[in-house]
Length: 608
Image 1 (tube, rainbow, N blue to C red):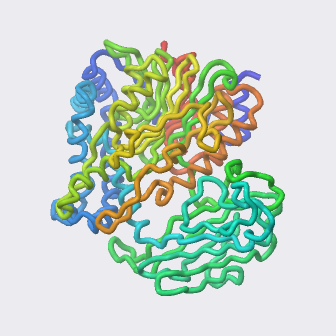
Image 2 (image 1 turned 60 degrees about the horizontal axis):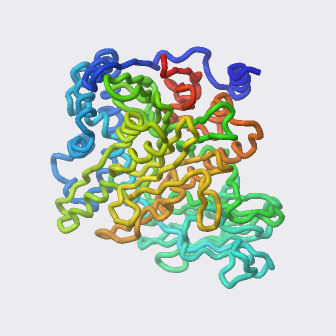
Image 3 (image 1 turned 90 degrees about the horizontal axis):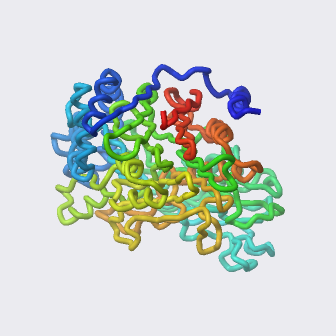
């Protein structure tokens, strides 16, 4: 069966998309100098660019980001000033950071943005904000989330009762019935299994702690698809003291034997936050613990998280790369990108084909008024795709550290290079994946990103980036290839030597941040606070299962079928789905609808 027919059959089965591309999707070929290309972009998409700025920035993002102001002002009193009130917080913050980022963007990037401004009728400052807001917003949102998580209850300890005397190695460390078997104290969010080979009647005991007290009535324990709340006979909740609550869950019926079981834990505190409304407690993010029951026969690092179908969380971005024996007809990169649609971004999608007067031609998948995309390829056969990765080791936190001696007047200020301009650097400069990695890593990013770079000769590498504000010795650069392994000899994120599966959680840079207290606020690694962490680990496992089950070489049609699989699609904020065929210099992109995978994949050959 031909690939196109195969994909059509899969779409009929999975409910893919209409037969024709949506009218919201554009393809532009831009030629000449950077300014020329910007002017063509601005002129041809004038109405869409103006619409995008108004609907996304002024009507959606500014109000969204302004909701972070009260939390951030508890740490940085400068944001209580009058100029940041009445909706001024978001625009002022983004513009101040944009002006600071402008220095590292380079002349060509600035010229291209000036061309867009001249062609579209927006001011240069408005175009600058539009082209820098992603990284700054992620950093500010991350700080706000970390502050909120910092005042929510923490999981102090987790214990699987009875496993310390069951005659089994439940930790996978090679010893049976150790003194602390089945106990995680202090609690550290697990990357893999929390315990293996537990009995089907094993009880779970969790201690939550909070200086303001934990409200027993907010304690939640979800076991697979079953929810247990305060008052349920299976869930005993006891206040140990003024700051700690102990929850003990007893299975009302045996857990499924020889299976993977997912526990999800949450609780809120007793302090009610009044501003911004409505009044509410501070809730712990959902903490996921995955175990196996006796007979599953899996080591902790071999466990694969099952897909959850309760609609609580949405899949974050992911990338699949294939080369060599795993690729049917040349190296491929597939990218599912989801972040924030706000019922707006999908109406302004554009594939930009750049044919500059110097340097290689290249294509990026993005949005009207933005000079870059988060994925793309060039005519030299190099492709790149990036996913955001939450981290407090980012340039905005770094700006606070630089001002720590005068925190009442400190401000959040981004520095470095936004990820889209890093993607452009790769495509403008690289002839190989190695050169692409060099272009990504010779200047600090604004925020945390996981980028995958590949070339048509089989080069394939993942680079995890942060801003290195804590000077941890790696310059914020953590690299690995499909053949690399961690200290336990487990592949970082591959099934074979010829593939990678990359999510939004760090795989090698697991200690992305040091742990410290800054003005009463705890700074901790990603896995302790990011809402992406468990979702990313789950989508990585889901896609890895699909890659591992594929016995035939991977081709474009099969990757497209993976990208449209409901379990890995964010139905609300999917922004684009892309397969890069590096040998053929072809971009296969679905975009223009929500989710993007409700649109057909359209092939654009860079050589034409």
